[in-house]
Length: 328
Image (cartoon, rainbow, N blue to C red; front, top):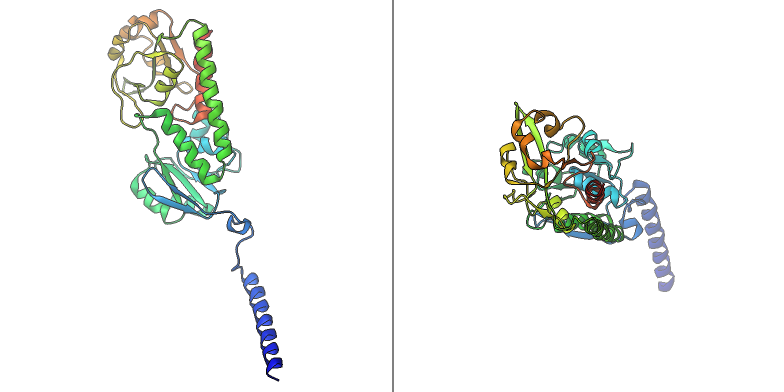
């Protein structure tokens, strides 16, 4: 009699447990079938460039990116972001990795729309240290957030590679990152060899960008430590600009008179569309036209759409542009 009672009790418990499982499934309290945990993905913990520890349930797939180098890296790794800050600007300045029509614009890079980001329900937001602390704090209230350093003039190429690897870890695309970086190193080696074969190894260069405002032209030389300066040096050329740049991007500031110290160099620059201070605003400037590299025809505008602060994809485009321009 006691044995039958125990069996009956076990049967009732089993029925109750099964019923509870069905009820929970119906209420959606089990793991989402599309979630990383549901597919057995392990949690990922990343320490970002703020020193903050960020834990994800698994590789992020719904990612919002608020700075163009993070956008470029995501696409290069095979992860199309669901939201991007300033899609139009990205399309103008970054040609190496294109966005598709599924991507939603979430405002400006410096002032993203928190509501737009929240509406996308991302499992990760990626930005850089250039974003304000107040915006970062608001985003952290709605989604996991990783902040990478936009650039580091003490280690320009190294920071670029670190940013790519951080995003790859967060999205489970480490193999893709390894392939990208191997291709990048091969591109540098091939470019250096082509310039050497053309007799250009050791020649001096200056890399700049510029903008005009109120009739004045401001020139930003890429100092030693800037990403493009370091990359051009890796190609075997010598940076003629010896002034200092800022601690992050390695950008100096000067005017046209400041360029007189360069001597005869290969003067490289990137502009966008019709906005070209050298060809437009300085076209009739006596100092500009007296510079040795201007008189020698060694002023080289590189193709539009090479993002000067991008990842390996943009840097590959830059290498191709420098090599083809100088060996033409």
